[in-house]
Length: 117
Image (cartoon, rainbow, N blue to C red; front, side, top):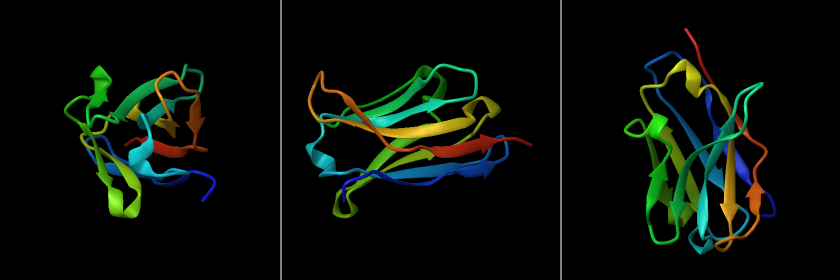
């Protein structure tokens, strides 16, 4: 595998749930950081969540308590579980990796998440 494989997302109503998944190019456990940014039309790209190599998981304030990162090392896949969705969660979600601290970001092509009634 030489590219990110991103899947999931789609359409949910407010209060609903969606998942996104990401299989990176490379070994999941070998990255310094792996997570997601999101971007809505006309807005700046916004950091969402990250899993760090020491096992720490961090989240932007607006998604704390609603979004959860998990991993399946056997499948080399990282997941973002999104619950209690809000319209402002709408955007394109980009999976990323950083190979070492200070390294360049490497990006997937993005998955659309739409929250609307």
